[in-house]
Length: 493
Image (tube, rainbow, N blue to C red):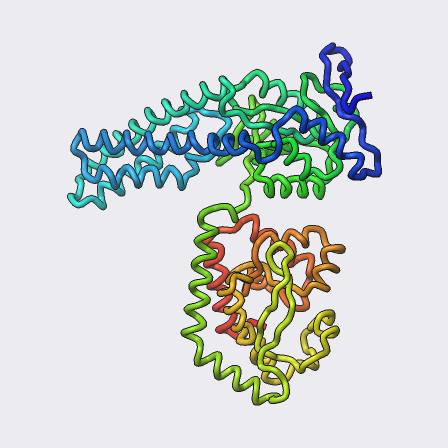
């Protein structure tokens, strides 16, 4: 008996490759044969094919960018329009800001034309205004028209090249579909017939036995159980499409985050998709609209900028605030000369790694067991008069600037917690572990919304995960501004 068998769909007569049923109690021994079956027909994880596929998926966007910069600069120079280089750079900058260089399934210049013309007009006008020789209204109008035409021609050539490469199997993305039913059947049919989408369906994940008997084609069908992260890696998948199904939200969320961790793009078919219109960054497979889920922001260049800027600001703050740090340290020492000035405690940071967090002591010293396992509540008798002031003003947190300089924390991120409580909360609260996808911070989205100290942990987790999923440099700036206002108004504690 082989690990996968062939079945015939009722009324269709087309063989379907069906994975063996997985028992209700799934063990590693049950999953290994199934994964091996998939792995035999696909490359090993992170092989040369995967690296080439990643590079090729970015390549067309780079080609489009270079072609459009060259086209605009050349035409502007030929027509002697002002600011040809600056205008070209501003146009592609506006296009990038508008998402014109994101990966698309549907490559149509007519669909992209409104966005392209809007960005090209803004960039060309800005280039003309900022040029060494100020341009008049006529020159700006000509520049905008020429920029639109140049970008549209360059984009037409780029899209034509990409469509041809996809048809020839060069820019193909190995794809898994989650969910069964008529939507999955339509998706499979469209992906097989419309090769210009660049999607190669290699697997369907669904627990419904009906799916296993009705899907047509040579796509592997297997239950949505077991360690899906290993399946994603072993199958060398590039894209996952989540369709309407009876799969629970918790399972889907875990699957999406597993995809994000291994760098697999996620597309979602919205519920009631028949009534949706294509807006924003939505795409389509045939007549079925799909939403692109934004991947991890920690892989973006702006995240590296955040880390560098925050460590630099923390180092600068330590120097500027040195007199204040000395004053606070002396006050803490005088309040109890027998106790240490700095409070040191083990906390959990990025990826579950532990580090030693520093604070000015604001409470009476406690034993190690009590310190690590006792929750601090409002009005705690262990907090003295000086401690209440330090907590209300957040001055007790200033030594954590050193943790930021050392790379153990960042300025903005989820607040760190003790190992005892991390283990407890992880077992009780869904999504708690996901907080540690990013470094912990001195302040955070949950903290400035009132969820710190003796408040709802479940709600704090929701705010922290919202911050991670929606991170941007501006969100960090807004959190810092709100934190500064809270400290100045004495609402820090």
